[in-house]
Amino acid sequence: AQSVTQLDSQVPVFEEAPVELRCNYSSSVSVYLFWYVQYPNQGLQLLLKYLSGSTLVKGINGFEAEFNKSQTSFHLRKPSVHISDTAEYFCAVRDHYGGATNKLIFGTGTLLAVQP
Amino acid sequence: SAVISQKPSRDICQRGTSLTIQCQVDSQVTMMFWYRQQPGQSLTLIATANQGSEATYESGFVIDKFPISRPNLTFSTLTVSNMSPEDSSIYLCSAWTGTSMNTEAFFGQGTRLTVV
Image 1 (cartoon, chains in turn red, green):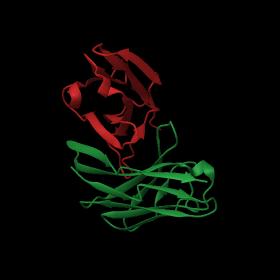
Image 2: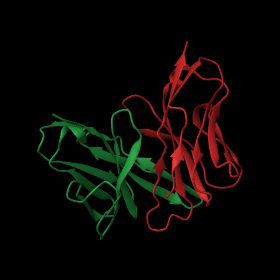
Image 3: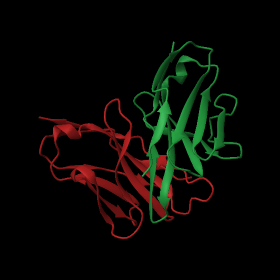
Image 4: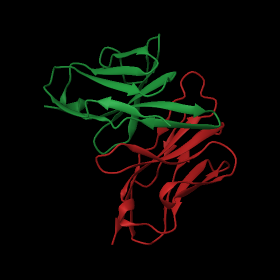
């Protein structure tokens, strides 16, 4: 079964510094990859997605992620963070050939804590 | 894109009672998904709901505890039965929209359930 690993449960970073949130998935089959953000007491918002094509994906709020098939990774990056980026970030994966279920499997989440 | 409306947004319930959560999508979708997010944790898939058939439950979740209805292509309900404090969580519904070349999972805002 597909699984997603986010090794860092919390990433503290100073404002305007760069940040990378790591995500690895288990399966080598063709997959769709997603990053979602959840601000405190709010729902999930899609940051970006990789379905096919260019391995470098750009999303909202200045975030980008790079799909690396050989390393089964999809790390999220931002060159300069703001206080407002403080939130929980979830990596998620779905098998490309989802068949009857098209399940979206989530990682455990990474809390990005931006400090002034 | 899709808009998913969920209600209630929050509730406080007595142990031993049941709560039914409603989820309405503004377009027809084949499958709808129900997730649970326990405090401070990630999203765990409870079940997949197809219109016209019984829901498919993930390991650790059973129909007697979480009965699901899917009467049409835009609506689903999840009931949390015989509640205990351990059921205190955020429950979210989700649906995929778009084509295989441009697909995305949308989420409702969630139902924040507290069992006392």
